[in-house]
Each structure stands twice: as C-alpha cells, then as structure tokens.
Amino acid sequence: MVVLVGLNTDRTAGQRSDLSRIKAWWRTLGGDGFIVLPPPTRGRYTQSDGHEDAAEMFATQGIATGTSFAYWHWQSHDAFDRSGDLQGVLYLHWGGDHATVATGLGEGPPGYRIVNNGPQGAFQLDKVTATDADGLPDPEDTAGVRQFLSRIDEPRRRTARSTEYDPLAPAEERWLHDRLSGPVDLDAAVRFTAPLEHRQALTPDETARLLSAWRETYAGRLTAWPGWRSVLPALLRQEHPAAWEVAAELGADAAYALAAHPSPRSLEQLRAWALTGDEGAVRGWFRAH
Image (cartoon, rainbow, N blue to C red; front, side):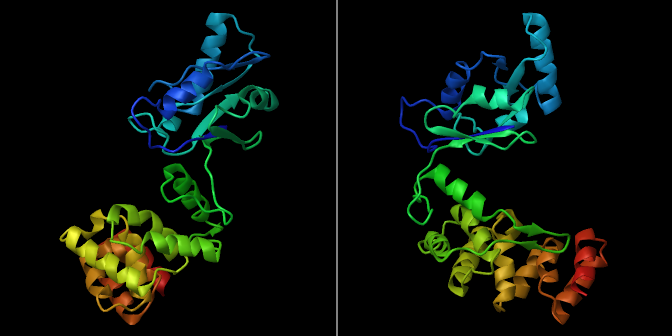
C-alpha cells in the first residue's frame, strides 16, 4: 500500500487541487513491468475490487498477467474533500512485485512524498510539510498540523481497559497549550484537547473556559460537541464542581469517563445507568470495581 504526503490545503484562485495534481502525476506512471489503474469510481470500493479491475485490464488490453500494478480505491478516495483537497493520507494499494511498484511510484509528485510501508502494507501519499527545530508545524499549515497531531496522538499501547500514549516533549505541550490560549473556538479546540488530556495535561483554566463555551453553545445537546470526551475527564480529574452535573446531563454516554475515575459517586451513577440496560454503563460499572 502507498501513502502520499502533500501541500497545504489552502489555495488561491487558479491553483489546482491536490486531486488534480496527483491525477496529473498518476498519468505519467507506467513502464518496465508496472502499470497504474485509473483513479477509482464507486465500483472499486475495496482492495479486492482493485485486484479484479487489474485482472480485467490485463485481459482487455493484452497486458501480461505478471505485471505489477498500483491503484487506490473509493474508500481511500475519502482522503480528498469535495473540492479535491487532501485531508489525510492517501493509501495506494498494489499487486505483483513490491520492489517494482516502489520503483514505479518513485518519490511522488512535486510537493508530496510517498511512504513505503514494506511488502505487507500500502504505500502512503501525503503532502510535504515543514517543521521547526523542535519538529513543530506552522499553526497556519493545515497539512502540517494534521500530520503533527496524527503523530502525537498515535497510542503507544492499547488494551481492553486502557490506552497509553508517549509523553509529549515540553515544546510539543507548549505548542498545544498555545492553540487553546486565545478566544475559545470549539471546532478548532477539539483537535488540541484530545492529545493534551490523553496525558492528563489540560489545565484547570483551559477546562473552565472550554466548559463555559461548550455549555453556552451546545445547551441541551452537550454530546453534539465531540470535544466533551476530553473535557469531561478533565473536569472529573480536576474535581471541578460542575463535573457531576455535566456527567448527568451527558447521560450514559459518559460512562467510560466515570469508570476511569472510580469513586462511590461514580459507582452509584454507573449502577443507575446500568440498570436501564445500557451496555456501556454495564461495562463501566464492572471496570470501576
């Protein structure tokens, strides 16, 4: 599988989208026992569909069946938004000889890079981005921020009961806190609260300001803001006076957070939710014991 890495998603009028750039590069590939399939339609939804398309192409065009090939399918195509801007890694799948495919794909189109994940994986294509001496992106570089957040929020270890993350470097933690230091933008804050609270690093001031904006903006529908999954654990950890009121309003969806902070009160609330038949609350109640 291949992954491509690319440019900033912001572009001015007249600039081509990531998708058009990648397609233009894609059309130049092929030769020396290697071909690429055309970009996908909804009919090529999975890897098996891609291999079927390759077999059909070999048969209709008289291509030797041992030819190596690369493609992406419709699920991978979700890496692009409706305007054709790359919003995540584009996975390039393949068949045949891995070394031949790697040579055929090369380094990717200008402004992008390809990551070779070896014979057992897909190639990845994403934008080329710049970082400073601490490995931090420019906050205005959409792709760079995305790549940074993806890297630091990759779990080190995951079990049925817990998920562990590597510690943040001091510069990384400062960068995240800086993103939350201005006026609260709940849509933007979601991305920065998670990696901080995964290390129990949201500060009481950050939590209080996020709570105020959240309750005001999402009154009566608190679960509609995805950032609650970071803020509620912080409220419980910091013993904020509003924590239990917020948990009650969230309902049984909050069971996982209460289970991670066992106390007589959390056990009582988990038991009440469990008695309604909520499976998450039942699991949380057993976990908290």
